Length: 352
Length: 215
Ligand SMILES: NC(=O)c1ccc[n+]([C@@H]2O[C@H](COP(=O)([O-])OP(=O)(O)OC[C@H]3O[C@@H](n4cnc5c(N)ncnc54)[C@H](OP(=O)(O)O)[C@@H]3O)[C@@H](O)[C@H]2O)c1
Image 1 (tube, protein in one colour):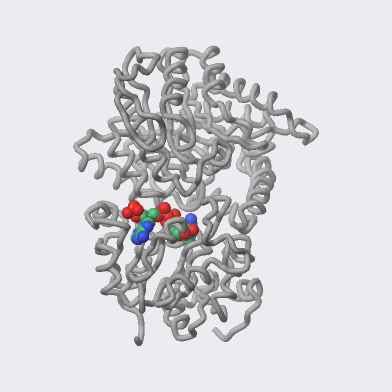
Image 2 (cartoon, rainbow over the protein chains, first blue to last red):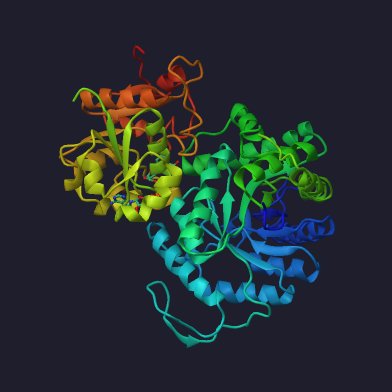
């Protein structure tokens, strides 16, 4: 039934990590570590590495494409993408140029996920108003779709200068790179992805993944409505893999708590407790924290439920040490991915 | 009005369809509207809220006992108050600046967002509830009336009869309703308040907002 190849990837937001003594490493070191993580991911058989755009001291990752280029130069197989690119506060022409350049450097391995992400720091930074988010995203996505067609572009809108018969370089070698739209729960965004012929990436970071099933359905129906062929659906979700369930939980929980405490203070919501954490790492929660077997089972079950053919595990959690992340990546590539492939290939699809 | 039977949900974004779904499950007749032509939300409604009727906002409101306002707060300043004049309105909106940005009309820290909504919708009766739990929790966290782990939701209004009607809806959907004595007290339900994003059962919820009432 699945017409798209299974893609099992990793995402990072480039969180700063702590050293062995629990002291935060410099931004520069954390960025260099992300390059090492990407290279390791390639070596252990991970299909894709995605880097999210963030602009905060705890996630100093404003130029994901630069970091992806460094990974590209040291790898030959892994696909390289954003997770996400905050298109609304960027110039679609520049985003297109940067990722086309990455595509050239990497021999056609670039991808882009357009979206809002869960942090909104780029808005004040670049002088945009969050109230304009929808309008900015709609118009800029439309321009991006135009750019992907290749050839001189003629375009007019409210959010940037008009283009008239404008060449936008570099030209693509083998057609446009794949583009996805990241959706966290807005049905309008699902429809938008279908309208522009972009694939759907479901960001499921809290609650039961099963509640997103209607979104995949809505996406395929909307594609039909717009007369388009089916496109793949992916899932992005946070997690951490270690040798055993206990170890994975013990490693992840303190940092998860710390990060959410920090954001609950800034954003004014209740701090999660152990009970809510247990729920999130359980079968009906959004977190993939555990041994390779636990994580693989959960991925296979939810991909099947959601009709997804791509899964990106967002690894790392503010402070969690580089060495632990390297182990997590190694286990994900060498054990989780082959296990998920087995489970999804077996005639009896895994049951919830 | 004896009880609520027909609900109009204004807003077909993240929150509106989630509320519409649980309302349908609870046996209400539900209409849903966005800012324009119902044809634009027909597909969304059909897939995400089977059983609800997509309508123009004015038509949805005209046939409803209760109107749920689930639109982005930054769109509220251009929302036409005449549309809901004389209606019972549930305000689920938040002024959540770190996530949604600032909205000038709601900047005055002396007033809660629902007080400002009520002042602008002077012809309507405004009740604040359903704003302080994530839309993604709304379906999962429902429990039958006798469940020990039933989550509580605050219901704040100046008009006790309106509060009672809405509390009944909250209970029927699957939550314990904890009444707060005024929209002003409803500030306790806002971002930064003691129950925003917290899953609490009745007793803990009552402690958190400092009210005590017979169940
Ligand atoms: N995030 C949560 O978990 C949560 C929980 C409880 C409450 N809230 C609050 O709920 C509110 C809605 O949030 P949301 O995330 O659902 O927003 P959203 O996804 O941006 O909602 C967009 C929807 O609102 C519609 N809309 C805008 N103006 C309208 C109008 N004048 N009349 C009718 N429909 C209109 C839009 O229609 P068009 O597409 O036609 O413009 C669209 O269907 C916010 O104030 C939020 O703070 C959020």
